[in-house]
Length: 317
Image 1 (spheres, rainbow, N blue to C red):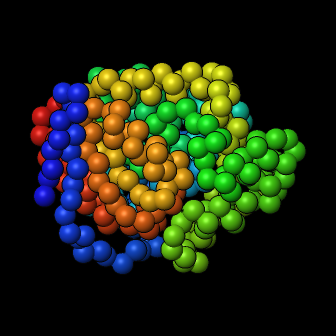
Image 2 (cartoon, rainbow, N blue to C red):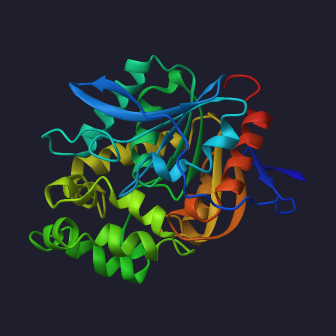
């Protein structure tokens, strides 16, 4: 059933329907690797299907591997492209700072290099900070945004779960962040597992770890936590996120919010704010999930993205 309600003249939609059949979650990555030169470095991506462009942007410490069970749903009727952010996955690791601006510049360059037009973005974690920013700055080139476990507005430590409030100040402080993330590999050895409901298979763990065999190779992973704007800092990044957050509250661009509980970036209060504040949004309550939700219910995510695109994007915004 598709329910519609009016709120301040903004149409809001929420899917309520029986849970669809789930396929077993596969560890295989059955896609051909492709590479494109962006700012003098190779960025890795996979591409399946034909039609309107759907661009998947992953977060930290992931790669396009996290979308492997979602791509087959979307690629049946669209051109599904999943890219490895610079320094992540099979993309090159140039000698750069791996700041927020760097990642945005490389994603912009990737879009330009492939000549992607009229894009639907599918984003999570750091992919959301990069993706929302891209949509805000290139609104004419974005058709819609599907998001899950995303950063929709500047964050405050008080809004985070207790374990996150304890951990983040530590990993954002030198030398503790360096020792924990680059030397101790805590994001891959601990957080990836704690923020996924199911137990990852050994093949999946190996795939996530493969891009980061050395201390030096984990520099991008360690830099991401320093770039997240919390309580107004870093100031420049806070301004960027605050800017796209204000834009999200007024743009009529179609949005799909895949809601998981209890979530990490999007808890109950944040979810309520999203549903109240963002116009032209479809909310799907996807049930249980923490942060790396693509590993817990990829079939539902894929099916709902396809259903939303069919229902709301038959014509451009």
